[in-house]
Length: 132
Image (cartoon, rainbow, N blue to C red; front, top):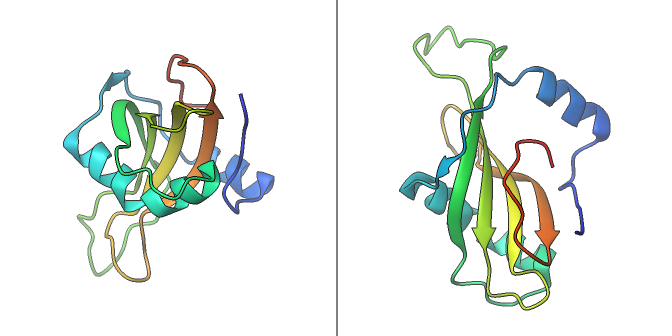
């Protein structure tokens, strides 16, 4: 199993982890999770060393919501951001499975984007966990 953080310091990961609520139960991946995977597909392709991973298939997911996110005075009813832990089937021969950790901010804009926070490449299928 190969590991890899995407441009995030260990200190930042620890701080982020402390702000996340408890994990949901493992569930089948939603259409929204599939859309998030497609949103970060180019980064996944780069990390896999592939030129075209067009058929990435989100199979399972766990979500964790931020509990200590500051509320906006302009948008007080805004939900906090969510971290998605998604198990993905790839067509890559060396790494047919990956786990991706994707951050979705409360509002997605040009400044606040959906971001791939972490990716773990796997040579075989493993059970999904919210810490990888």
